[in-house]
Image (cartoon, rainbow, N blue to C red):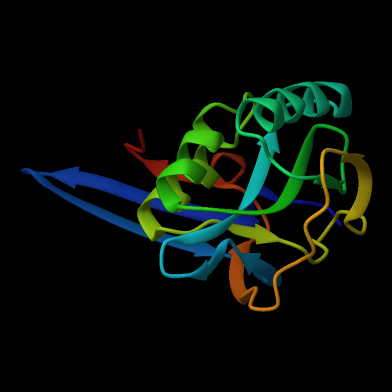
Length: 171
């Protein structure tokens, strides 16, 4: 698919101390999972950006050792970013510490995790990309997937905000 900048248009204007923001974007439906298992209990989910597979393995191995994490499965559909899942159950603050200690963590993923009190990880195919495939498993000790993993269905833009057309004083 040709990703036209017109697939996402953002308008932002500031006038006399007021800001107006409006966005039009072509969207897609995504299926994912949530980190939240029950109140203050989470599995660890990562969204890594701007790294290759060896860099992802290096940073995830470091946090796996530091926090005594179970096996970590690394998934991807491109060569410069990866997702990862660990089924060890931790409290929310520990999950945030793990994410903060992980090099290449996607800043938007970290921000939304902190705001929503849970992480959300995409599992389905994103338009213009291949299928999510397992790239590596970092072995430590095995924990099976919990039964109560929350399935998430959400809409997201085909383009990231910085890829679209921006009009006005967008900062």
